[in-house]
Image 1 (tube, helix red, strand yellow):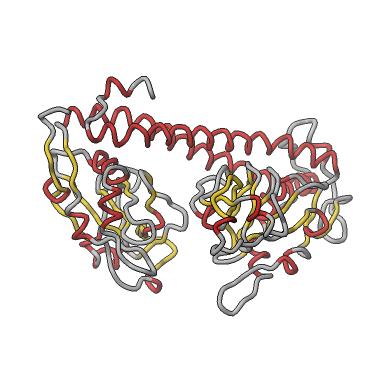
Image 2 (spheres, one colour):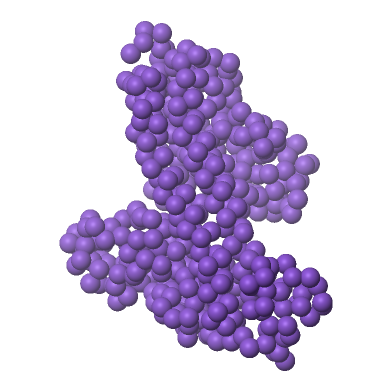
Length: 427
């Protein structure tokens, strides 16, 4: 290990280590304003814009202490303590709560701190995380994070290796966002707006391929759907099942090799692709779940706390009681059912009930109407949309491999155990 590396604490290499806004926020959110980051928006190495809130500029100016700018480092305090990311250039201004905010001195790259916190600082964060109900990491403990700091030139070399992996992961993630948006747009045009049929009614020019355009009817029936299309219920078209949790007091049910999903497994997905689960059960545990082992291609919808997380299982999986699981063995494909559920999420919520928290039961879900096309057009849709989803699966698998490589190299590079030249063959 180089003698030029220094032992430092986070506060020694920062101009400021402070905390984001603390206090109630629900009545401060507006439709359009300054982005307001919460802990759920900060994942290791990335800022997640899912459910990103906005606050007024006036309120942002009042919260000057927690205002953010590109290059600031944010560390989650509650929820998933220790998740760390750098504010990117595409977020020129923002504000925040539930995070520690770090501003680096010129002797350390912000991204280097992000890699430190997401790797070698994990034990420190775990040791100083408190709270029985909700885990919490405080700003005082953040200041004491200790690590070895190489010269700036070596930092840049390390970041060149790790950054290349992260850049490819981020590229794949953004590509998947584009692919998902494209699939949703096609579904909405064909099966929600009935765009091609309406275009024919209005005498507009064809905008789909010559072999696809004739498959759409040229008029709507008296119920407002394309002539000849079918209206059924989702319960008639797919097999809808739920799940269960084997007794956690019986060790014989846990620690096997069978994937067992909870809505938490879906909550952290950036792409609706389930490749693995946090917990596994044994065959004895599986015997406690009436729906058994669900096949690849099962569409999963979280049915409570909250309703709406979705994924298509890419591994055989058992599920707990927090799911509507849909096995697509009849006329509708898994990709169609995934997109249909996303497009009808408002209806799903309208059919939910519950005094403590909203839940959509299987009995209330099955009668929801689904309108779909003739078999030849369903096949064309699947031929169009499935390659988009398959590419999403491929990108997600590649990201798992890239992340595994990064996580293997991360602590070794950050401690000086492995030098950059030796790490490049792994990359």
